[in-house]
Length: 460
Image (cartoon, rainbow, N blue to C red; front, side, top):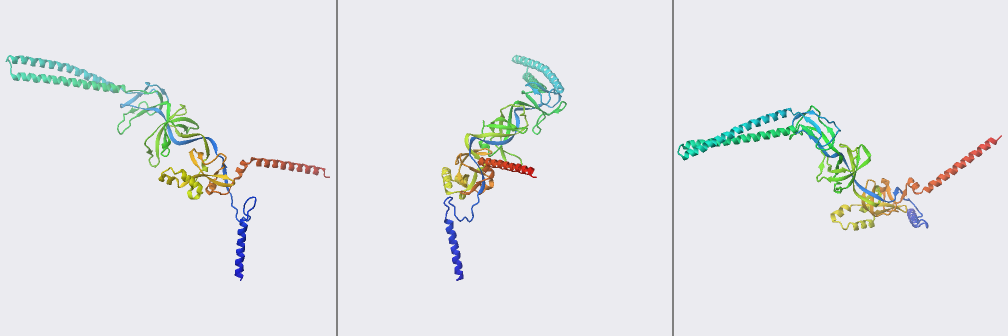
């Protein structure tokens, strides 16, 4: 009997709670019995903005001259004169250095003497050939008169051929000697090294008195100096393989020098390499690109390190929101209407691409009636701070932008509230009223203090 009464009592209590929970207040519509009220998530909001947005690709690089020449020697010799110094401005044809030429001058004299001797021998060979031809002609006439033998005729023919061969040998020796003298003369000209371009001596690697050597397969040879044309500069940058498809010839860029990062220098993409390179010991693949520096300034010098920003896309009047407002949610965590709308937009894609993009859906949350409302968006280009929204939000919407922990907890219909600093910014009149009340209170306190002072002074 007692157990039955206990069960009836519990059943009555549960029924009462259920009935009270279904009663609603007329004004708010909330239940009269609020057992556990939902705690609002503190958020920060921002309104979409109209403005310009530029997508940038950033890459490191090194500054160099478009036209730069390494000056080396083509012969092995010693530097005997160097009238220029590093930093000097030179014109095309100016003397850069002079090499020791005494051994080459001696070889020239020797070659000329050798040619003179060969020419004398050539005259002798021509005379011998002429005599052999005359003897052979005489033997022919004697043979017609049967005044000589066939042996004599044959011997004279052989002597004529030997004289002709000797003359050919002398001519060949003369040609070889003349070629050798020409080569030595060219080497003699190479002892005087002049500037091939107009420019500046950007690097001086050798000094007067040093012996310079020529390059071979295993030895690059001696680089005496480097001449750079500083009127045209370029930046050789290394672009990540993920950004290479959107970097094209002719795109604008900005060059930020490490020495002066606050003042960018304008540039333009000249070309992008067709093959990537991988740095030793790293798995990162980069593509080399050349960026022309459009503003010739004295502060842009070869060898400087720079960071480059390339404009790959631009929108003049776009609706943008902070990048942190865009979140990715799994399909099962979103309302059915949002998922259906997303699938309808993906209908034109093939199955593999649709499956790839359908795992996570890109959305934003909007604050409406103190609760979070999910919106499906179509994003455009983005920079480091903002992202373009082509579809899904309006300029009057309050986009929830943070903090990150709150964004991670947001769901459709979740109760949200502005942070204290956001409330003050949203309603500045409250702050003004607080300031007026504070002034009134200060005035009241001042009057009370004055009255107390007067009362004390009038007391006996």
